[in-house]
Length: 136
Image (cartoon, rainbow, N blue to C red; front, top):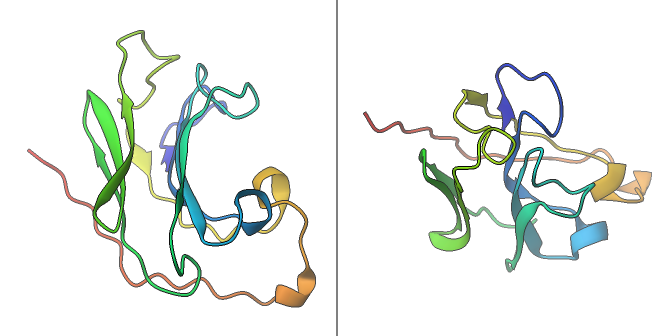
């Protein structure tokens, strides 16, 4: 997820509900992360968790984020695997009070994706459904 009023990365935040990168994480492993000015991968301070998931790339799984003003909880198939709490230290630590939009991305290569092998192209990225709920 990326901020609606994005100006600078990582300052304005990024929420990765699920990332899958075989070349850097390994087969059948997914991760959830947050990035912001205080916590980001170039500084080695990102808040992330890598979880082993059998059939991560060959079967459907349910990835979820429960997001409140106090914390974010990340789930895979109903199992909590990462909690990130708002420490109350301001925007550099929690830019997540602003609206964010969903981003479904099949990335190829890059810093996380690593070296690519074009023999794997074209690739198919299947998404069964996306649901967003908001408490009032």
